[in-house]
Amino acid sequence: MTLDGLAKMLKARFYKNIYLKADIAKKEDLILVKPHTFMNLSGFTVRKTIDKFRLELSDFLVICDDLNLPLGKLRLRKSGSSGGHKGLSSIIESLQAEHFARLRIGIDRPPSEIDSSSFVLSKFLKEEQPCIKQSIENACQCALDWATRDIEKVMAEFN
Image (tube, rainbow, N blue to C red; front, side, top):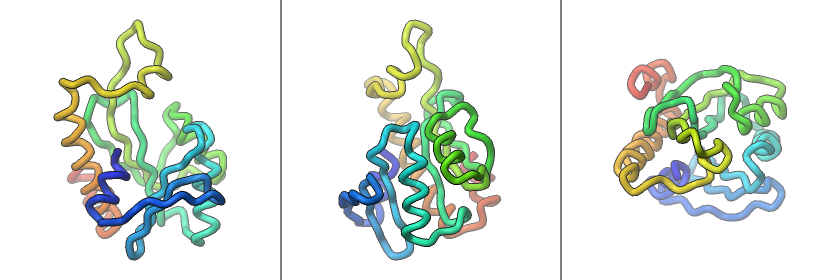
């Protein structure tokens, strides 16, 4: 949802890239990548993207959901562990490094009767929509600021 919002803000269109197994949108120096792989295999696409575009680890930002953050809360970090997130684990394994920026967007914990896998794949409730809309707008701005400003200042503003 955040990448779609960024593409809209940038007036960029996604196209399929079979080699990367992803949808790609480019605008000037920014490349938006939405992997087609399962989340726990997203490291494949990240590795291929870094190789294809000759990127440094400091050149990319991973944007992902986070069950451990309250709904709508953002957390930008320069680096770190996966925190149990299978997509981040895949990326860390594929890159053999943890030193890359990540923006986590809180989706909250599921109710006890719903397992995590089902929860992360489900749609947001109607009453959650205003919070989600605002957090996506904030995440888009955070990502753009990350690309153009000092990360410490961006973290202080958005975390």
